Amino acid sequence: MKAIVLAAGRGSRMKSLTDERPKCMVELRGRTLLEWQLEALRGAGIREIAIVTGYKRELLADQGLIEFHNPRWAQTNMVSSLACAEAWLEDSPCIVSYSDIFYSPAAVRSLMASEASLAVTYDPNWLALWTQRFGDPLLDAETFRLTSAGTLAEIGNKPKSVDDVQGQYMGLLRFTPQGWAEVVRLLSERTPEQRDKVHMTHTLQQVIEAGRVPIQACAYAGEWGEVDSSEDLALYQ
Image (cartoon, rainbow, N blue to C red; front, side):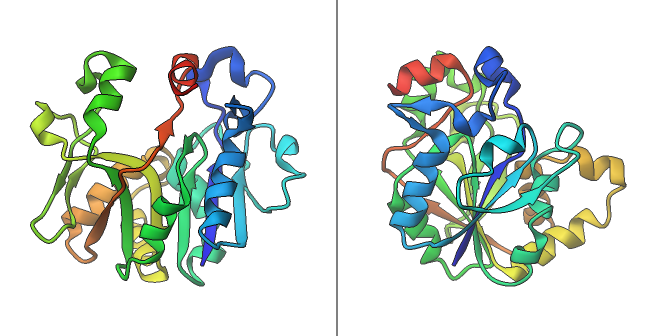
């Protein structure tokens, strides 16, 4: 199993914290976010790890990781960054991690154990954390609904109530070559301008609507967090 960390963006919502460094180099409890991710991935037994760079790539050159570079990081979104690692995604199953999250090896192992072509982790106990972060949890929440079989029924839309959110998508996924091929097929139906702007959750929703590849949802109840602001850092400290 290989892993890919998506670290091309600047993280503009972090304001001055990312003026001189990529978002994944912001520190939490004495370690960078990237160090948290690498520890979890390696703790789950993954040794081949790549990073997709963009903003201030030179600061990530000494991490001992394979680099895939997105030269158009400022004009594109996360799916375009992931496509820069297509050589790995076409070859074998890959764990894919956002670079602004932290989690334990258990989250990674749950994905490694999946036999699905495409799988995501989610937090079923999301409400308490989102209430701490935002006051009104629906300010930043997206829909996340499950089928009776434990696959995704909906993701990434605006929820009308907390009942539309059965869990919080974490930004930690697993693609097999078959799962990635379905994403490539859907992207091929879009214009280049549309591909540049597409978000990961919207892409997953398109996979659901196409109905060809079920997306397994792996529940994770351990410690994790998404860091979008200095307030988040203070909360997780």
